[in-house]
Length: 406
Image (cartoon, rainbow, N blue to C red; front, side, top):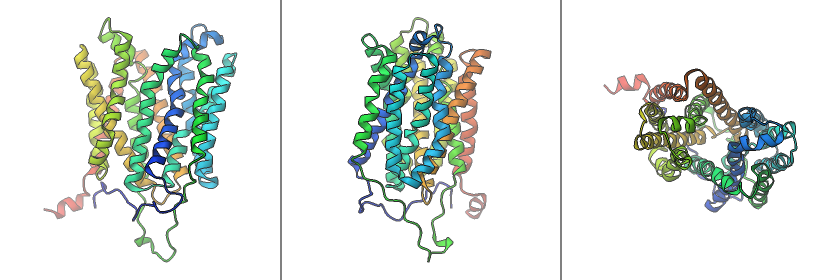
């Protein structure tokens, strides 16, 4: 059997109170969107926030940008295990309320240490990615779960596109620092909505009468974790210095245009993720291999992007790879969740994902400082190419099967 096979459960749990209907899944996605909104929209404005807190040159902006990510990664496995033990809905509510408290503290902070502490709490007390996905995995399975995970990624991408625009539009009236106080309303509203949703049933244990051979084997976790780390690394590494890179390659380009160039890959995901899921949910390793290949081509294409049309083309190519990779990673995660405690698995997955983002930021900073703004995309290209080769190997049938067909 090829490793393309994704384990599926024998049926969908739609007949019990713990199951989630389509409207409920959309409600969860809306809550994930509003929780992501402030977390993704305000960090780009740290350079405008820090001077009033005692950092005139905003030298700590780069470090503080990743502080929530680091502490979210550190806390995710703990919160995932607690969710499996005490209830996924309860821990999801905790994550939303944790964001509410941390945003209030950030908006009220009057010094750099106080603001830093608020960002630490935002990362550690938040963790809505793992909490949301663990909640969904306890109520859904198979294609329904992978579609829901794809929708959650769409919520995050929509927030990534829309949030900085809204924060910038509000800035003339409300200082970005004080917008944390306003944004605290969003996770609080999400918590109120989530309180109306059911607690998902725990996955039923396999009957003791069944032998191990009769039980469906759980999909391996290591390929999922490795691909998650490398994919996040390869795609995120181009983010921090994209604006300066575009300004170098396209002299005189407007801020609006660079913002659109940044958003294009995420817009591709919003437009095509559902279709990609339909095409590749039965062969995720093929989709991931293709996704890594397109990411590598898109990043490499930045080297020849000396005109706006070429720059747009390579960003769209990167967007195609981003969409394929994220959707197929969701399919693999849905298969791996079968027969496992979802809170613990998705908590570890968030640790791996955030680790990839932190590694990308560190490598991007080092490469940019040593070799210039083009260096991060070169590093991302190399990582994506290696992962494409590995994913292609996994998508092929075992060697003995190929020989037996001859």
